[in-house]
Image (spheres, rainbow over the protein chains, first blue to last red):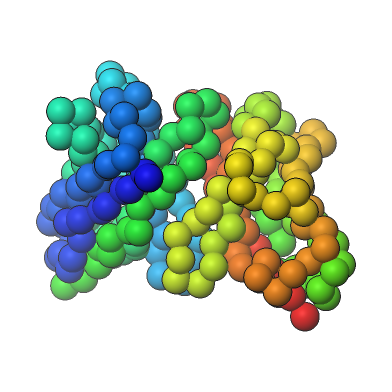
Length: 119
Length: 110
């Protein structure tokens, strides 16, 4: 079965960087686009970014453009999110999710990793 | 990239039907047939319930249905059951190759 396992979360000071990883198994990883979605404590879902199946294109939500970079290594079945210049408002659980294929449908989700930005 | 508008909460009794609306613009909901709905129980991972406005993934009961008219999409749950109590989020593909979520609706089964 499809499994997505995020890692790399933790407590980080404002202005610092953090890299999240999402290890995929049970699927042909290189066939699917992959997303990052976040959820602040007690709040709703917020889309962060998508990377195409082959890593050739990435698209971002406006609030992370220029600060976050989504990437993937298909040889390692792993998705990444490099987060720079972190702010308190970036505090959230970050989920990776598989793209169904069309229209940005997220059909499999990881359990999430918590990022806390605090001094 | 403004969030789609959902009611904060809805409620219904077991066996009844409820509908959750999701209002966007012509740049997202109204412009594409790529509206999805997700169910999230407290402390759990979101689960895809409806995609492409009205299609159900395998394993989702046919009590769940979706529709769209203009800039507003809707999720209807018929024959409400206790386990349906959860938060529900709509999402839509949006112009600029992005995705936008609704603010979420808390469904209470009375």
